[in-house]
Image (cartoon, rainbow, N blue to C red):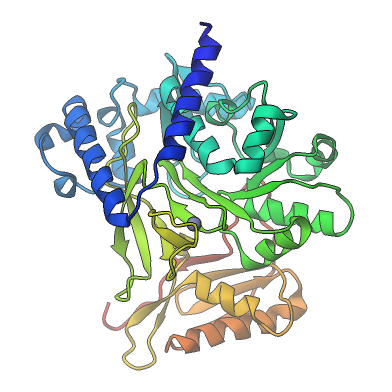
Length: 442
Ligand SMILES: [Zn+2]
């Protein structure tokens, strides 16, 4: 059997396994997950120098790590002996040449597209890539797309990203015509080629999808994708609406980052955690347990390890059960980074309390007139607000003040600053806390 045929077999096996994993209850899923984690820790901890003092300990007793700890101990957290310097140099060289096939001895390396702080570095072996491809296809292909993949013309996938990698290239085959559109030079240069490709599946950062949808609504692009998937950015309500109007809903999402494949939308468009393959422990942000920071343990990986890794994201739990019946936790949204949360003094006791970005997004989305693109940056007591259409500044500021009032917070001073759109190859963050206000208690 040829190597290629063997690899397709491996992908198919992981596809079928991921499809076949259904649990009758959440308790059954968690019990199964616990067994996988125990096995994973028994096998992996002795191989990883970082955990030398922790061999035999249960997951809950292992230290919580974050990006800076991971980068500082990079070579102690992988079992192929690759150093951070070596991995970074290889991945950077690939970014410069835009040739995304870097690897060190069969291990693919890549950089995360983060814009703040040190960039994350990831490494995956070929067998992990094949497993990832199988699981990804199991999550993305509905019945109609699967029939098409098996019996119809090759499936055409358009993928807009800031950096490609071997990981995504794994999906390309005779049955999947996978085209990568590099956002480094912006979106416009790709429009003719996108039109010519006429993809069945369109994958892009949420904001890029919003722009493609706007062009389609204006009649400047004729596309009829069967599935539209937002990645890498918060899916804002205005973009979601535009995409649904242009292509029909629901807009799907993949929650995939350097640290793993963490979530996907089911056929109802509801985001579920990928708990059959990743353990996600909530660090609750509020007493009502509606929002949490995920602490990730990827018990499916075998080269680079993320064990109790605290991501800087804020996730919002969905209150109702999802009609699809999946036992995996359902989310309302990936709200963004933890530093997208604004902090304002409470009206009653002056203590700082959170004003979550979704509260602002919601207030702006229900404003009486449709409001344009905006940026909000908190600098202490003042919010710097930039609006794409200057005339709408009052509307945006008013919506933000109302959102603060509804939470019992002192309304912030709103300062009008000039708007500059985020470049297309940079991750858009509409709401950012640069500095928190100082309090007398702090
Ligand atoms: Zn569901």
